Image 1 (cartoon, helix red, strand yellow):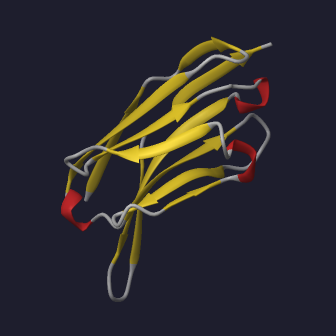
Image 2: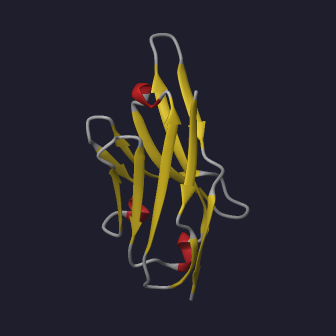
Amino acid sequence: QVQLVESGGGLVQAGGSLRLSCAASGSTFEINAMGWYRQAPGKQRELVAVVSSGGSTNYADSVKGRFTISRGNAKNTVYLQMNSLKPEDTAVYYCNAVILRILTTSDYWGQGTQVTVSS
C-alpha cells in the first residue's frame, strides 16, 4: 500500500507560478512511476506529467515548456513546478503512484489539491 499527500495548491494570477509537492509513504520502494493528473470541472481527469523510477519524464502537450516534474533525493517525493500558468490550468491536481508487479498493476492517488489561475 502507498499513501500520497499533496500540498502547494492555491490561487495565482495568470503568468504566475506554483509548486506542488507529493509525499509518498508505505511501500515506496515498489513505486515504478509517479505523476500528476488534473481534472477540471466537467472534464475527464488527464495526465499532466509523469516521471519513472529511472528519471524519464513525459508531459502533456499543453504543459510542455511550462511545467517541470521532478523527484526528491529520497525518491518518495515528487514535485510539479508550474510556471507561466494560464486560466485553463485551473483544476484539481492529483498525485499518482504506480506499482508494476508480474501479474498486476496498482494505482494510488492522493486526495487532490486545487489550483486556480485567475485571468
